[in-house]
Amino acid sequence: MSEPFFMLKRMKERRKRRRFYPEHRVYRDRHSFLDLTEEQVLHQYRLDKQAIHDLCLELGCDLESSTGRSHALPVAVKVTSALMFLATGSFQTSTRDQTGISQSAMSNCLAQFLEALVKRAGQYICFPRSDQQLQQATRGFRELSGFPDVLGAVGCLHVALRAPSENEQAYRNSRSFHSMNMQVVCDAHCAITNVVAKYPGSCLNAYILEQSALARLLNGGEINGVWLVGDRSYPPKPWLMTPILYPSTSAEEKYNEMHQATRCVIQRTFTFLKARFRCLDRASGALQYSPQKVCQIFLACCILHNIAISRDMPLELEGASQEESDSEADSEAFCQNAILQASSAASDARSRIVALFQ
Image (cartoon, rainbow, N blue to C red; front, top):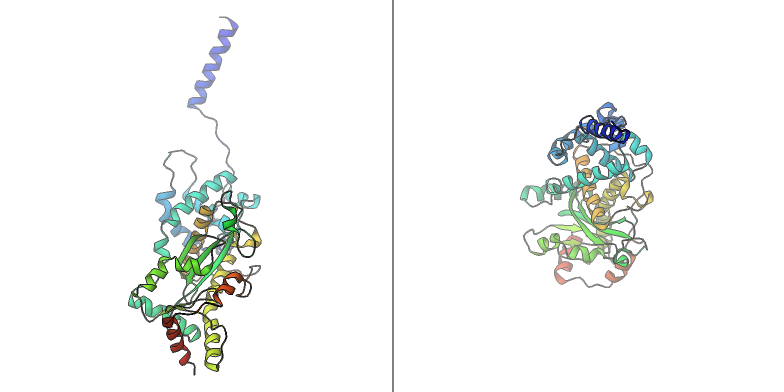
């Protein structure tokens, strides 16, 4: 047998052996969240063990691999990898060491997790509609501040992102960084009841609210005798109570005091969101994703925030940045809305509330 023929035969045999006896891929040890203490789990993932377990069960049908590969990542690894990114805002070495998977695998885990969770948003973020829900919402605010018939507090949060390659200027906000302007409504307990996550940073708060399905609902008269509270970046409406720009009586001053005590709950909600999920905090850097992906990330954080609120989970606020005040946020909107004239219906509704403080 000639030497070339012999070598060719050996090469074929080697390829055949590889086909049936593949070399084992080396995987780093993965740490299970079940091996950690409850305190460690809360610190790393921002949810407790039971909540993570419940998420794994609920999202399992979407996250389980259908490839049949023996080394497919378990659902729990995908969930905790995504939670760790949302908690820290990065795929840095320390994060990868905890999960035991590569950066590209973590990125895939995040994408799968976001898609699976966001499509369930309606289960976790619900605006009050029934009589019982309306009574519960208004009672919560009455106990919080004494302001009557409040359904929710509305506000916007700018989430920083890298400059998009298309229509870059649309994403530059009044504070000169690129962002998505996210509208949120919360109840008296900081649970989120409505989210609009799709507008670039240059869009004003009032415009986002005016274009929302929530405004159409409240304008339609289906829900009457209750209102939202918002800051000076919004024009007053029959269903939206805003501060009186130039109070001239003690009753109007009292109204403004009560209004501020009520509206501050949305600022606390934003502070909690950014403390729990540092990926939303600009101090941790802008999100390096497309606008669509940033909106998914924000909505997922809102869902997880509500899960944490419903389970009364503790939160570390140390190092969290506070949401900016009215005078600093949306200054352009403030200047525009300062000269807006309220409709007669809006003025009448606000006057009736002011009369309660005389």
